Amino acid sequence: MSFELLEPASLDEAIGMLDPDDYGVRAIAGGTALSLMVQSHIFKPVRLISLRRLHGDLRGVHVEADGSLRIGAMTTLTELERSPVLAISEPVLARALHTLSNVRVRNVATLGGHLAHGDPHMDLPAILVTLGARVRAVSPRGERWIDVAGLITGYYETSLAGDELIVDVHIPTQPAGSRAAYAKFTALSNDDWPSVGVAVWVRREGETIVEARIAVGGATDHPTRMIAAEAAVTGIVPTSKAFAEAGDAAAAEVEPIGDLRGSGPYKREMVRVHVRRALERVTATPRTCSICASSSACSAASSAPPARRSSRLPHGLAIGQWKAKRRKQGQGHRPWTPLKAKPLKSIHQRNVQLLFFRLRKRYRVRQPPLTVPLRAGSILQHASLRIALRQPLPAMRNLLRCLRRHFRNAAIVS
Image 1 (cartoon, rainbow, N blue to C red):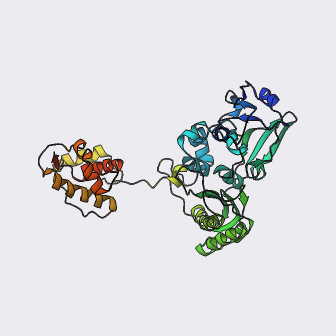
Image 2 (image 1 turned 135 degrees about the vertical axis):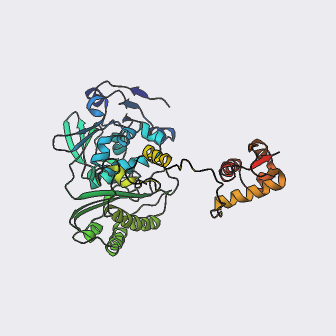
Image 3 (image 1 turned 120 degrees about the horizontal axis):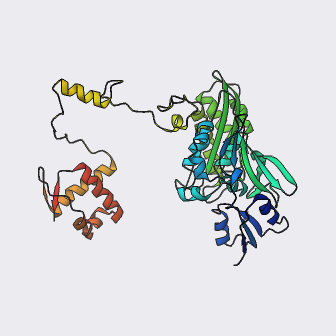
């Protein structure tokens, strides 16, 4: 397979190379999705126009004068993930990017390509729909604005013309009292595209939800607003019963498509569950960030666990002051005392205990206070022990690491 690869140096030059009448001519940004389609012979290109040399306004996250966000189409997902502006303005996007695909894909994939590809198994389109985002597309005829809700029209179908390119994405300023959340489920692996993704945006006045937007992706051929579920939670005080009714309404309204990641009825049930979970998450009491003392403007306040203060230190007393106080009182450092053995409860700990006792039968094991180190090489070479434990070699290494932690003073001599 041979095709022509062009690398224009400007946006106008790239638009001039596009041919709306030839489906074999395609612009390529990161190429993470298009390269797989070419390798699978699903798409046979005639000419690929690489946009990797385009910089300037096509990259970066910018704050407009009215407080809205403008994100360049060639901004990579990793740059979005690490952007402090995005983390403060739209923390729901920053949190979703942490688990979007894997690091290798995020380092190369761009936001414009993420939207223009039209894959229904995407995380960001559903979130951008609830945030009311728009994209600006440029062609030889000029530019036009397209709502993200109307950008993806079907299975790998978009409303973009063959000679149009997405230049940037605009996210409007969110009103006071609004919050957004995203809940997804991956059936194959943690870094796989979601089987179901539910984005929820609500605006509250006091305890009452006055406006709600719920969009479902992954289960449908394009991001779909759940109108019945939105009506079920609008004008009410958040309750578990109301959220369950909204999940039932979304499950009745959605038209799921079955694929490798789940059948249609299975995805319908997942929509029911994750609509309820996303509503519970978006109406939960926000945590306070220990860094900036903010409750909703910081992504760390919603994603990171609350800061844990040491129980040994009095509040407001630094570690150096605490040590000086103890030395002044004549206490100093406590002498080392052996820890008492704790019961092993988890399955992994029981495997460690089983391994330890079987090693005692095969090798000479001496108890503390000997200083002979634990040698793992001779243990891993003993194949019959691995077969007896029914554990593969990587699992044996993990068990030996855990064995060193639990039995630091034990010495195994082959």
